[in-house]
Image 1 (cartoon, rainbow, N blue to C red):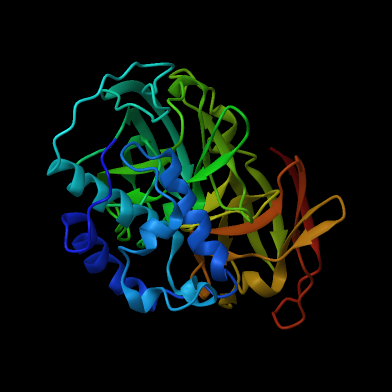
Image 2: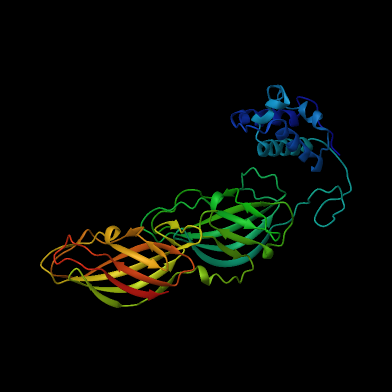
Length: 375
């Protein structure tokens, strides 16, 4: 066992250098527990098992005026700092020990480094309108390009491909909206990703996302969950053969016709999706996108205003559009005007009624018209 070095050693210098910036990271109400819980972590560390009072001897004095004021230290930063300092210190100390590996851990109970392993996945889901393909999952003790602050002994990395087919940039915010579900149901948030910038229109790029895990877990028993707590969530088991068909777009072609406000309309297609226009549906919801074609044989321009006069109904739910692509008007005597109208509807709904509300602001005036479809 390597003893703690005295003040002025590599250990003390690195702790001093790295903890001082964390004075700006307050964690109110944690008080003494913040330091004590963090320091207890050292009891399971490979190189040091000192009493917490020994550690405090090596920390900057301004951080240790009183236990009630140690809440200014971030626990994750403290752990990461002490680990880094300890590694640096142990590199300058010569030791000899015999280590026995038991279930992936050293004889002293410390997790042992593991070689990099790669599991092919090749599953694709559309999250927030971006097509995300999980190419493979890798597991290792660390990755040289991961500069996160995890204190876990292992990392699981997803190598992914992202394609944005929309007309605008999309931000996915993996740290909030991508989780690794462990075999016991525990949810682990992503801690690092290669590229956090928005994905531009029509852009295809590669990326990676890392998750810290505390045990040498079997990758095939893990599940990736797309979607935050308030979003429609999609689970992708990392088996390499997961069935993700229920998350794919589903489109039907009703081609049903009706007359409304003197125009001849056709409901050409209807699409069900878990996301639309760069946004994931809310929890328990999905998007229904209807495509309409209109011919205007009248002598007056028709002003569409879908948000005011188009509704979608299912059972007791009636929704206004969240978006539409119609131009402001359909010119008199024209044919083939197309546009989409998007609605947010209950995820378990399958029968719908498109409602064109009555209007008195047009000539001729429009009575209510409905058309039904299932998807």
